[in-house]
Image (tube, rainbow, N blue to C red):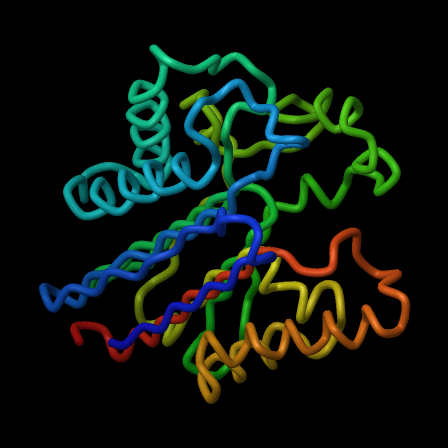
Length: 265
């Protein structure tokens, strides 16, 4: 097995709110990928004294530890436990009922010699590559169903945030874990996988520079930093053309890539 992780902030004036890691264990070829994309609140208004980077670091650390220490628990249960643990760590100082309390999209993957488990919540992406090179994107498309004009309004977006008929993120309610997109694939059917925040996946889903198979190919040959470099090149070219295809010039961008190798390796 081998892994590669890269992350770039959207702006040098703001902290990177993404969080990503890959943990590989030689024991039975086990491993875990955790990827979070923190949700930036308008004007910093989220009822929390800590901020989004603090939240993603706490949640990401909890997810990583629990994924390894609780092999008996499903990924949905792991996410629920991690959300509760993170909420408890600032419940006494922050307003966790605030609609914009710190929150994040989530991608989890965990594997051993037999299976690959996966979970996706909100608009980050998990790619699974089979032995024949076919690539499947695991997506939670609920945010994509919200009309673009609605997302331009803070008030309208808040009415759909973590609500039925809207979209869901990991915030302070452990129950949201039960709404994530989950699945299990035999280990022999996955030779590599990748997790991308939407700042990285825009190479495919915004700029159309290639499909998901092409994206996996870039990760394999150029690494995670190579993909992020390609994203920044597209963003700059789009800005020179008027920047009509996105609402901000750059976004925090993180990519995690893992080659699993044969089962048992």
